[in-house]
Amino acid sequence: MDRSIEDTIRDLMVERLFLKVSPEEIGDEEPLMDTYGLDSVNIFELVAGLEEVYGITFEDSDFELDLFENVRSIAACVRAKLDAQE
Image (cartoon, rainbow, N blue to C red; front, side):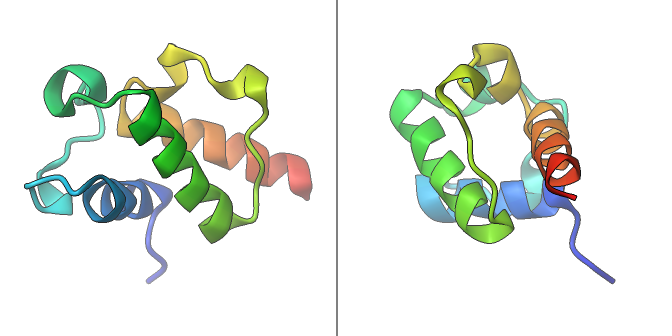
């Protein structure tokens, strides 16, 4: 079975942000900034990973705090970018 975008986001968060949790512990609706202290540097690191994995590009206008609120909101953005490429 293919890994979901949410699974990939969780993996990237743990791997690139050096979080001391397993990817499975990160909930889809969990507020990332409050729970894991995500800041702009972390977000850029996460975005770089998503761009590499999915071959998408985040524009400056994509960097809205709401977009990076939780795993589900990031995944929705990735899906929209993938759909736009088709």
